[in-house]
Amino acid sequence: MPQLKYQRPTGTHDLYPGAERWVDDSDRRAALVETFRHLCRVYGYGEIRTPVFEATDLFTRSIGEGTDIVSKEMYTFTTKGGDSLTLRPESTAPVLRAFVENGLHARGGVTKLFYVATHFRYERPTKGRYRQHEQLGVEALGSDDPALDAEVIELALAFYRRIGISELTLKLNSVGSALSRAAYLTALKAHVEPHLGEFSEEGRARFAHNPLRMLDTKNARELEILRAAPALTEYLSDEERAHFETLCRYLQDAGVPYDLDPYLVRGFDYYTKTAFEIQAPSIQTAQNALGGGGRYNRLVSEIGGPNTPGIGFGLGIERTLLVLQEIGADMPPAPGPVAFLVTQGERARPVGVRILAELRASGISADTAYGASSMKAQLRAADRARARYAVILGDDEVAQDVVQLKSLTGGWQHAVPVAEIAEWLSGGRAPS
Ligand code: AMP
Image (cartoon, rainbow, N blue to C red):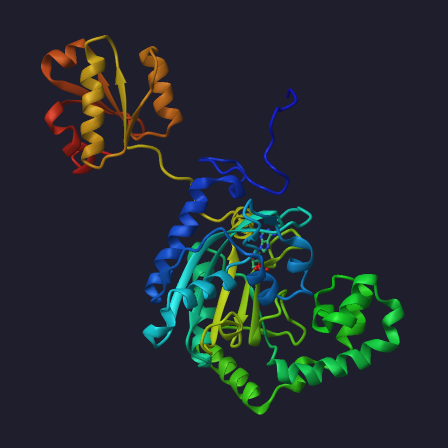
């Protein structure tokens, strides 16, 4: 292939219909989004959409200065007016900002929101990890009830079940509160300190500035040392422990299996109490977390709103598509048009163009080949488009006010009056 003049930026995707790799396929992606939207509505969640960029501060304060996202991965720029803005690397902070700014908290009760959002992180791209990715997420604000935690987790799992991914692991932990974590971090540091020489420079920096983030490491030796450390769950307050136990009971009652993982902290500083991650064992990449989430009972007040507990999750669309393709899920591409107009001769073309418009007006998907070409080439185009019927029109048909309706799958052909085509195609009059 000759050198391309322009290429898409590293770590991004072009999405188009019928792509071989599902992660590039706009139709299959749209089908996932549609399933998610529908399910969210079943659970009582309404859609929220926020800007693609936000004040940089919103992210640094909420996600936390010591996290990978804030320290290395944000797309931050200064506007001509001198403001620092950042392309959103996640959606929880923006959704909560919008919740506060638009006074949604004043409605009282629990506010249940879902989003479909593009996120940007300057990461080293590999399979399942990109610089632009999309997440399906929810945020439920206004209650600390563990039943809400269970609902949010069940919603995520119901989504995966519905799209055909049932082999999943739910990792579950409670990360307590800032208060209970303080005692834990003291113990963690005391455990790590004698081994600090074996830690990487980054690990040592985390030890000094944000010790919880040491648990994010992928370094095998560091993990070994950390896994011998006391677990966060041992430091929970009675109330936090009770909250977690109640959540576990709800999940058991609902028949949702989970794995307790006392070292699961996830990459954000804002979590309190519940933290969870959904992993797909089938995915052939190091990035096997399909999604994750947790509770953030301090975050709304930290960004300037009234004290409001909340919980949410974000599920990665690209990794979900990778898994679906890997397991050979039944997810056909979008179907082709019902009808494909094929014309022969100059008189037939304008009549055909009118029929095309009428079919579309009655809600029947219809297409045609553009530019002059033979009948044979037009029928080939109809096959390529995966159309179900060809609507064939020549001079004779125009004279008689009929078309030849030809099944492209069933091998039959009928002369049908123009006024009855739509009825044939939508009313089931056509033999299949
Ligand atoms: P997080 O926002 O980090 O909790 O991630 C939630 C989910 O979003 C992950 O489990 C992934 O499925 C997806 N995700 C996060 N970062 C990326 C990325 N850089 N590329 C693709 N998917 C991502």
